[in-house]
Length: 248
Image (cartoon, rainbow, N blue to C red; front, side, top):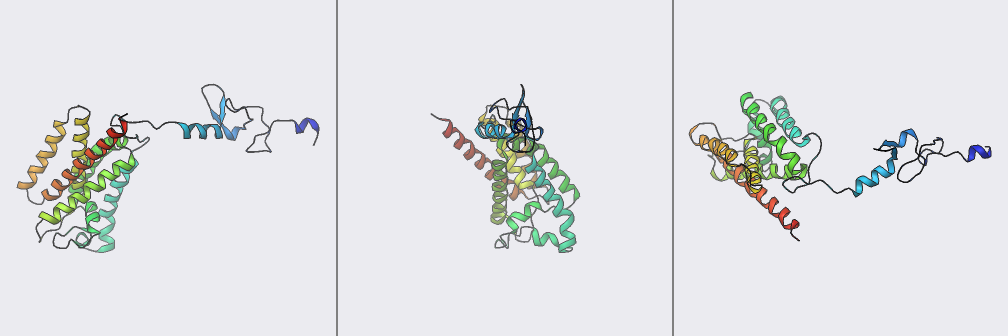
């Protein structure tokens, strides 16, 4: 190799690539594969990664770490409900909802406390719940962050199942995402109230559907009530935790 060739600048990540472009931050040579466009010039991938590590997470108006991008957690929950509705009958047979649904007379079937939240008794039941989950889940998930959002959903689901076991008729089978969704509704109302925004409309909507369950057959009012109580309590505790950390 000639002396002139040895002095040519090469990319640290790709020593065989000669480049005369330098990173605006560290001033090392950076090849086209390692270049990231910046407002002025380019940065190398190493400097971009270091800057991302040092960047402070963006907080939502609730004080939680915000979630960016599409509401994937909500989409996954919806996909799980759809998958159970269409696949479970094929795998488990005609009475699949007894295998996955929650039976108040058999609380020791611990798995059903969770699987019942993905069981739906008809296409209309599924469509209504998925619309509600999409409507409110896609608003809460970005504001809460995916981990807290999923925690709220799971706590609401378990609270719904617990109330069904306590108050549900022993000759019934319960299922549906509505218990967890009622938890999201109640949590949403608590969040709006904490920000001094209009929250009574959400609360009234949830209360209307809750009361309807007492008079319309086939609606698990026990699950709705348990989910709402658990969701409201979980959101209140999360908000209190954030407020304590904010205090000097």
